[in-house]
Length: 147
View 1 (tube, rainbow, N blue to C red):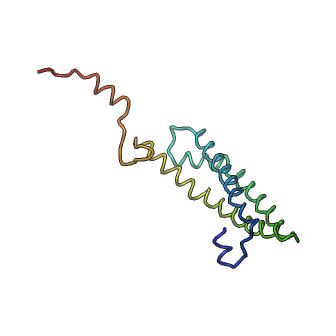
View 2 (cartoon, one colour):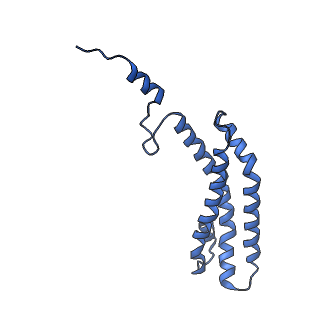
């Protein structure tokens, strides 16, 4: 949202500097709602079915809260107070872009992370796989030859 408004030539004021913190809160709230709903889905299902169940469960609520925030900040653009006007002018497209990232990029990251978990890969060093507990127990249970 910021980049688009910079390209258009909208002035950057001191009031619009607080907006990233507001956007962080809105985006984090949506991420918590989506990831919480994903964790509540049936873990025996395929990843794509779980994502479908997640979006079916919380997609409308995330969409409605986004639309109401966009509408509120859009109506704030009618204000005659310059600081409120510029803040709202920066906020309403930024919230829309945040929503688009939530339903595209964040959902894709959930799918990628779930695939990583199913492949028994580490969190931060994905090139290393971890042995299953059952496999490790069976290796330890085998008799060792002594020479």
